[in-house]
Structures are given as C-alpha cells and as structure tokens.
Length: 139
Length: 108
Image (tube, rainbow over all chains, first blue to last red; front, side, top):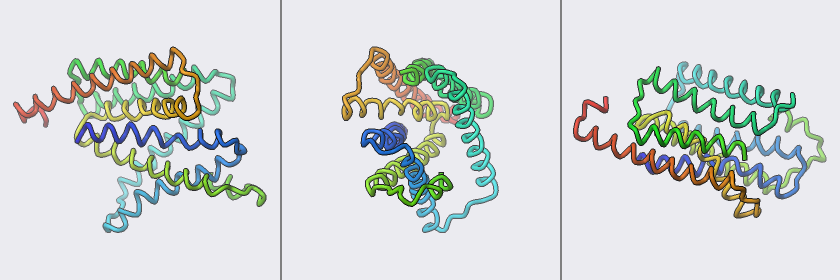
C-alpha cells in the first residue's frame, strides 16, 4: 500500500504542474495562465468535494481552521518567492532554498511534533532526496 | 486567479484544450494531495513530503522526452540521486514493516 501511494504521489503530483509547460509549448499568451489556474484549482476542489458530498461527509471547524492556516502559509510562501525573484535574487538561489527549506521544516516537525525516528536507510534516502530536490530546483 | 480571469478582456478567448488540460492536471493535483494525506497515516510525514518534492523530476523527464529539452549533467545527477533516494526510502520502509511485524509495540 505504501509503495503504491508513493508511486501515485510521484506521478500525479509531478504531472499536475506540467500543464503550464504545455501552455508555454503551445505558444499561448501569458494571460492564459489565469483561466488555466482557475480551472485547475476548481477541478481539484471538485475532485475532492464531490465524493465528500456524495458520501454525506461534513467539514468541521478544525479542518477549516487548519486548511485555512496551511492555505495562508502557502500563499505567503508564493508571495515571498515572487518578491525575492522580482528583487533580483536569482532563481537558482530562490527555488532550492524554498523547496529544501520546506523539506527541512517538515522533517523537523516530523521529529519534534510526531516523534518520527528514522532507520539508517530512510535517513540516507532522505539526505540523498534532499540533495536531489535542491539540484532539480537549480537545474 | 479568479479575479484576474474575470478581468481579462472579452477578446481573451481561451482555447478548449487549455481547459481540458487544466481539469486533467487539477484532478492529478487533488489525487496527489489525497494520496499524501493517506500516506502520512501509514508512514512518515517527512518521507511523504520528500516524495511530493521529488515528483518535480517527473515533468523534467517528460519535458526532455516531449520537448527535447537539453539533458544537462546537473539533471542527470539529480535523476540518479532521485532513484537512489527512492531505493533507500523503500528499503527503510521494508525494514520498518518487518520490525513492526516482529514487535507490534514499535508501530505505536
């Protein structure tokens, strides 16, 4: 089950960002990204909300609160990245810091909040994955 | 995004294919988020989050294949590290599963 989930995450999350590349490849104007992203978010919301509605599931205050917090933090991160890039900080500096930083923060939270312990292969895999993600951000 | 979309000039005709890929990849993103949520209930949040970030390699591979983008040494090294990392993460998961199977108290 865990392996299947990791494969699903790898493929679906990776491909979810590919649409903007396709739009760029089609040579469409820059403004097309706004209706594209609106439809992208709307379809993602529908894909999660519709099954919930059909099953009669309800969203509680706790889910709304934490959803709002993570959403606000996500927007804050995007704005900070945009400000850094527009201030002249090179992309090969901004992206590795943003991606690597988020992994570091989650690893720290995993250890401090959830008490996660790593066996040696997992720790080595995390270290190598961290370097790989930073290199991908630089490339 | 919605406001910017609504403020677009009426002449800003958007092709159907743009909406088709938006829906397709939007659903992909939703499935990824759900898979991540499920994965952290059975595995480590750090590993699941790392996998979300390692997935950045997938569009790079597809871009090299579809758009014949240049495969630099940096990208090759990064892809190699992604594969080795996934191998070690999977190995770690197998060890953990065996440890839990032999001593269920460890999984709590």
